[in-house]
Length: 211
Image (cartoon, rainbow, N blue to C red; front, side):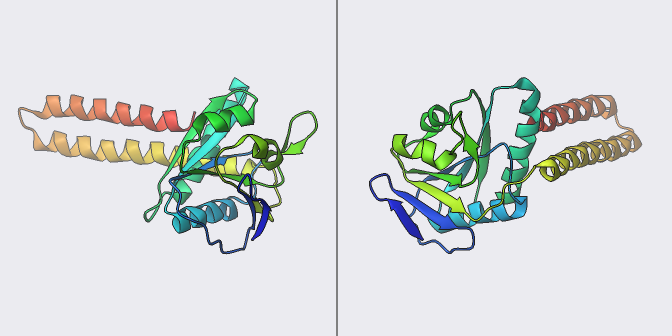
């Protein structure tokens, strides 16, 4: 662990390093447009959350509607991979181009911002931690040792998760409705309508996570 700037509480953490970090309330994780190996990234973030007792907030920045669905799938997939044991994660897509403004608008006392070291932004292509560091009032931790790559694999995994969810919902409710019909009670029609309404509501909710 190498301290970069004690005034701004910025610390660089190699990917395979075990960190001794004081407890924090929440990890704010700006997700770059490209992702490193998904398993490695999410495992390191989970380790930080586990060691600090923090929840996780994945943030995406988007200025193009055509990229929104892909970004949402990325965030949902990452959140699903760290939502286990006592660690919980949420996602949010912010529209705009200014990471400093986006991150600062979500930071609260007790939070900690976690960045990857290779992603670059702006006209001068500066690393995101370098852009954020001067303007943050909360600790900034930098995960190093990642080779960022195209996130086509991540998009494929998110799409697969979406389709699996749709199929499970459709099959599950179909089986339930068959059982209701076989009961042949005076409540059959009402139960059919109720389960159909619930099915559509769950499908809309699931769809909202991936679009």
